[in-house]
Length: 159
Image (cartoon, rainbow, N blue to C red; front, side, top):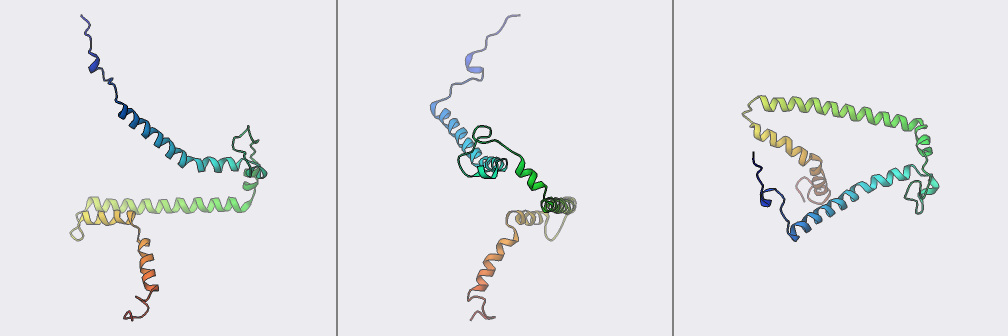
């Protein structure tokens, strides 16, 4: 069996132009900046949480190089009964709210998907549900309350 040689142009390796390489480099640099911008606050919070309180002020950024990390602030925080109780309350409320939302959302989705509605139509109903996610009703409170605070709604007839 003879071995076939594959031309260089069909191997999938092509030479990119300068503008394509610069474009890819620009995208990666932009991605790195966005990633740094997004993750730096988490780094800062964690680093400050393992410092001694007196080390929080000054140029102490690198653990084991500019300061000695300690878990004493964490131990002190978890030793307080109020903190443990607040965390338990938050966990219970969040799991409860997520469970209720999941159950009600599943039932609503089943109803929309399974049954044909005449009025409103399924598409309109789905659009209304999605619009509540995009534009929650609370955003309409500010314009209406500010218009009522002005002279528009100060009297029943707008005088």
